[in-house]
Length: 251
Image (cartoon, rainbow, N blue to C red; front, top):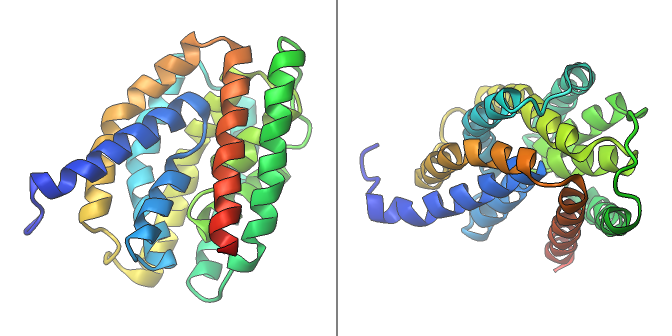
């Protein structure tokens, strides 16, 4: 804690609060926003991802508990996501600490932008038609891998694709947020084993404080917001963040 002043922490607290508020309400964005911030400050990719996932271990725990209390979690879906997510996350963390996994990022981001556009269309045209998702385990595996390797991706990949399959928005967001706690704990442990605790910096402390403070509010918003509105907002957020990710990857 030595050398960490409140003034220096405030910008990171604000970003952590805003990012987690969006993440808790829409099931994505904390990792993408936070990782982008740390990378823009010159933090190495592996250290940025490690720092973000260390923070998310706490924020997702609070967010997951809040979603459980608001009855936003589908436990069968949770079980189908958590185990493949842990496996994918471990592999992704190992890859990021050993080789460059950034080559596939523009392709993944372009795909997610297309998913986002479709979700916006679906929100306006097909709202109210919900059905159980059939393809789940592969999403957990891929989402966990990309989340660790890219510093964010669990929410966009898993939430976006479950919604495309027609799963109920509120239950999707709550379940993905709750299962992310298991994922981030696994990823953080893998990073710490490879990198130590060097990633826990002033920035990650600020993100942690802001994120934990906002986590309970996101679950409340998800419960109170109509499914159609959630679908449209998720689609817009996914499209914007993914297109920005493509720009950064190609710049």
